[in-house]
Structures are given as C-alpha cells and as structure tokens.
Image 1 (cartoon, helix red, strand yellow):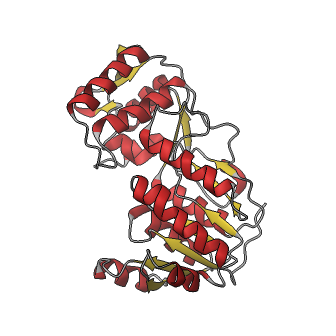
Image 2: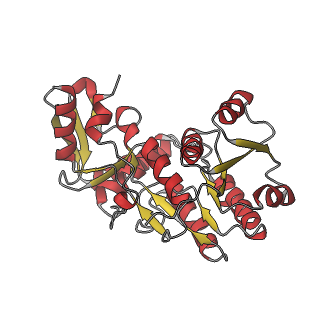
Length: 302
C-alpha cells in the first residue's frame, strides 16, 4: 500500500553522501518537501548540488539538541543515511532520535541499509552489531520506525566486492554455491526508501532485493552480461573464510576505518552462511519502482 502525499516534509541527514543524496532527490521527484540537515563544515559544492535539485539545506550543529529539534519540527519523517562507526551509528543517531521525538516527528528511518542483521550472530560483524545496538534504542522510543534492508549493494560487484574476478573470468566463493544471495543497487535502494518515507503504513522492517542469485546464478549473469565464460572458484568452506577474517583483522586492525578489508569479508561471511537472507521480501510494495538486475549492473560495467 502506498499513501504518499506531496504535502509531507521529510528531513534527511546524510544527504551529502551518495545514498543520502539519491534519497533526497528521489523524494523531490515524488513531490515531497525535503530538508537536508548538514554540518556547518559541509562541502559547498554538495550543498549547491542539493539546492539545485530542489532540496532545502539547513546547516546545524549536530551536538546542539535545540537546533536539531527546531530543524525537525513539522516533519512527517526523519531519514538517516549516515555512514560511520559508533560515534555516528549509535551516538549521533541517538541524538537525532531524541530530537525527532522531542519535535513530535511521527516516524524515523535509521541508516541500516544492509543484510538482515536481526538474524546474524552478535560479534560476527562489527558494523552490523552497531546497527543492532541502535535498533534497541530505537525500538524503546515512542516513535514509529522502519528499517530498509537491501542485502548487498549490487554496485559493489563491479568494484570493491571480490566475488566477480573479471580479469580471470572467475566467481570466487566460500561454502555453498547454491546459497541464495540478495543484491540491490544504491539507486534502487534510494528510490524505495523515498517511497517508504512517504508511506505512513510501513511495517518495522522492509526487506528488498533487486535480484536474488546463488553463486551459480552469479556466474550465469556475469557470463551473459560479458559474453565470456565465467567459471566457479571455490576457495574453501566457511571455516576457511573465518580463518581469513581472523588473520586479516590481526594484521590490519584498522579500528578507525568504516570498511576495512576484514569488514567486507565479515559481510560476505554473513551472506554466504544464509543467516542474513532477506525473507519475506517486500520488493514489490511500490510497483512503480523497476529494480535493476545483477546482469544489468555487470553489463553496464566500464
């Protein structure tokens, strides 16, 4: 069900980032009044870009709860598209949550945008553990909340995610080649989030997948998209991946990095185990959104 209204005001935090900017522009296209809260030190070019897209930009001190409350008054939903570690995902989002409640904003969409971390073992993924911690605070507050869970960003398959080895025409994996995996592009995630922000009837969690493929399906999609014969390369079982994560984390702690190499490996481990599979899917809740397949993402690779 979609109960959108072009009179709604949506406050978004994190609009100077890729995902947040896409969400803000998608909201404008859907007729919303969009206000982006940015730091005083935010890049001027990013601010001009947002304003040219029809977004109202308001500079605030994120440590000043009074400023946050004032900026949020009259909004029907606050959307967080922030990226970071504890100071951002837990501490800053808690400030935003407190401000939203004080300003009588009825709904809050946190910066989750991930696999289903409600099903993953605690301690198996540092970044998802932080989201789980903030989720507990959000659920204890008197505000309606909706998390958007989208699997892996499909865009990463042609970049940072090491599953498709294009120079070798190989699909590398650990564990079971028949385990279904969920992928959604950043653009599609943003479009869906915009629709959800304008929908007063959303449940606590919305699970979406632009495409769901096994490792074998990923091989087929890559082969069809490139015209080359990709083959499977099984490195070992999940225990091997566990060892690699432990070794990499020991050699490269990078505790201040949001996405060190071992963090991506943890994410793959969660996906390949099947524990984080999105089910049931709410992909078709907004039928006007056409989702991009993995094959299309690979085909568009430059």
